[in-house]
Image 1 (spheres, protein in one colour):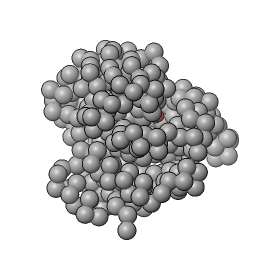
Image 2 (cartoon, rainbow, N blue to C red):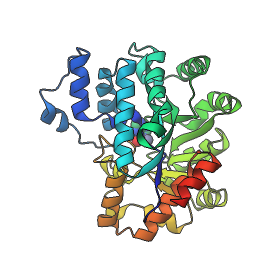
Image 3 (cartoon, rainbow, N blue to C red):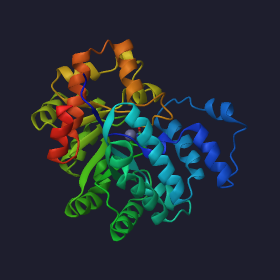
Image 4 (tube, helix red, strand yellow):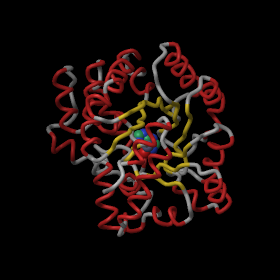
Length: 321
Ligand code: HPA
Ligand code: ZN
């Protein structure tokens, strides 16, 4: 019997499935630039992070009301629960919605309504993390974050995502200091496409408790030693890395090297509607293509519970299986 999983690196907007895009466009009278589902699906071929982000942000235009955000979040919980996920900590991008005229309370009310009932409805504990769009102006990140705090949204943390290279963590020291002073958990995408230096910055300048992706840490032995020593979790997303061409194939993925180095690695789906599947699909593909063993899967599952921000009582319950 395998341990339940915590999924710790998931962008809720990246769980917007093509069918949902068409349904929400219809109910919100949004004109889509796609002829049909096949036309949309034919665009899910990416050459790098930016080529994905262009489609990811474009498709969000169908999300308009709190009902849309609640439906999106519940659809993810249902699918994740079927994948063996018992605890989920997921990102959302407030700026991506506010900047196209959706009021922040619509976003927060919808997401938080689904979070509030996830244990009862899906047997899955959950928490939402506001993520800063790092390639937008720094002052905007600070303003939107202030608004999230003013509205007293029960988020668990602050993250940093979107286009990495050219937008180092150092730009965001102030807003992360503020988040820490508000008692929030903090984490950052680093070392997905960007250099190991960005991981050092996330740790030293932002106080990141987890690193999202972090695969390029392997280029820097001193950094690996630090991450091992401090047991900093790395939320790795294997299918995402292949789809965005950060890694050639799952057979070449550094996941096993990371485990063997003693890093606290977890497996996650990132943007499952775009990258070929949910976390169970990631594990099946890792078994088939990287030869991931049952013991390694068990280690990864236990790592995910350990790396989560669930309460000690919830962690103990999940680790009992
Ligand atoms: N990386 C950075 N930003 C993102 C991603 C990702 O994989 N998915 C959604 N926003
Ligand atoms: Zn991500």
